[in-house]
Image (cartoon, rainbow, N blue to C red; front, side, top):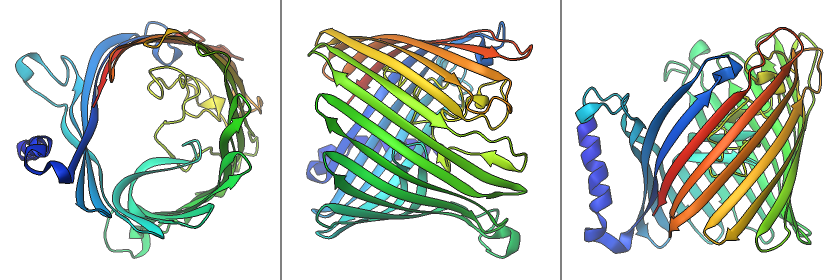
Length: 395
């Protein structure tokens, strides 16, 4: 069956020769070389390896208003592990399908149905592929979006009792606010089998204020999970300015309330695929290098604990001495908002990178990220280092 799927994917790639007017192809290939030191801040926990992936997205047009999207990842794995000598004993991902959906675009609405990616705001509150239905309504100046997804059948298609489903419901209202693109959103993850639920309410804006580009979001959370009440309130602000044609500088502020109530658990998202990553967001390795699990809870770094929340600041800059060459750096400092519930005093991060466009849609880059923790107790505080070399081709 797997070989058949690979053959079908190859046919999709070759299809333009037969129906060029009805098919659009795009995608990317990457090869990454990794070197990690003191993984999870543990002394002597090191590794190094290469990995690769080919991603192909096909857009099949039924007519001017309706099309189907298929996105597949092929040949994804680690050299010598997933892809051994002569491709023997392969246990890598020969083919993975992560987008299959249909879109019907009309004058007053757009309907999207199937396996699709859905996010809200800065891609922190909700950020994941879902099987669901999305409806975008088109009004002058306002675009309401309604989204319903099936998160889990909970073990059976029978919806009685413990087998009842978990569903995600979301609404996002996009509108213009002065010079800003603004979004007010609400999402609910509802587990009908256990009566657990989690909800998030937020406001997001992005736009230019003179020479400064601003992105901001504030969100609050609630719900229940077992014996715990779910809580969370967080804010994010990013400012970026092009000082000259060659120099860009910026900074970020992160804040999230912690809690010391033993009956409460702090959350910062309903679902998250790590698209939002302030540690490496200015680098070619954006969202590849995750130092701590939640940017809004510094207690999630390995060795940490508790519902700590966060107080964080980053400063970054990029220089382009020529159009094809970029160099950048970033420093971040994160501490617990409630230091009574965690042994993490602070985390300081540094990154530096260089990228070079070898040709159109072809880039070579080298990124280094360093994480330096400070614990209140005897927990090991070894610095964590991540070096990534990447070759990427887009088409």
